[in-house]
Length: 354
Ligand SMILES: Cc1cc2nc3c(=O)[nH]c(=O)nc-3n(C[C@H](O)[C@H](O)[C@H](O)COP(=O)(O)OP(=O)(O)OC[C@H]3O[C@@H](n4cnc5c(N)ncnc54)[C@H](O)[C@@H]3O)c2cc1C
Image (cartoon, rainbow, N blue to C red):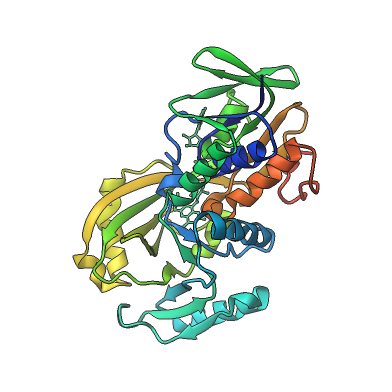
């Protein structure tokens, strides 16, 4: 029998499988498509401070892990927050300085690649990575620890009354001591196929992959992206993250699944208003994926109240690459009955009316 069945092969599920297997658990992960098929392979690629005090320790732990697994630099490349209204940007920098002094927010001279009239505030954070790199590297680690990662294997929860008994995969029951659902925006559908319980919703993003002759080293983000944590960002906000010879130009914040190719021109146009070279850049492709947005913008981690053996790690919204592995470590600890209890701000209870 499997000790832990993990549902979902994104950053959350793959990291959890690795942490569990490292401690000697027999782990099998079931991914319905391929590893990093969804947001974990199609994100913008910014490992960065999430601008939420509850999530900051998760970011720090994740960044430490990436130093080993991805060879992340000690020094951040920096995030440039951009706006046309320098006054408002300065006021925002002051608020950020009060909340997160270690980010050292300061208005800087706009680099020459920015359009005239665009003001920039530098934050001391931000490591650009190839979007799928973290998940695929952690999959290697998980396999090295003995986790079995199945792809093209959609899983349903096998639940009897108040007990999670395992998963059903291709019609076959796979008993497991515990089930960890890490299915991103599809987590509620796995936990409650009736559709009544929906504490995580998809917020769809489109990124256009472009090849720039001189990609900026810093991560560029239009001011206002902070609101993405609460799920209240504008429908389109400029961002540009360059790694591995490609740049991810984003992004949208939409309730319904968009046609990525249909939005590519609009993203290039709005991006060129910040970085004029984007108007001439070669477009490699466009992709859509869904942010798993929880009701309060923070992930749901740990045991599901009232269902023995059922655990979650999902709902990381816009910052799952920057925080997902730390929450996966917490979920693994809870399954193994070790470590500190899950903090109330992250526990699943808050989405269960308890
Ligand atoms: C446009 C965009 C840009 C982003 N940029 C950044 C960024 O720069 N930095 C950052 O930190 N975060 C970013 N994010 C957020 C980040 O990508 C997500 O928070 C994170 O990838 C979520 O990971 P996950 O493992 O929880 O879910 P997912 O990556 O969605 O993985 C869930 C997996 O579960 C699988 N699945 C679903 N149902 C089943 C089932 N029944 N059986 C088996 N498998 C199933 C899916 O196929 C999927 O592979 C971005 C998101 C978007 C949309």
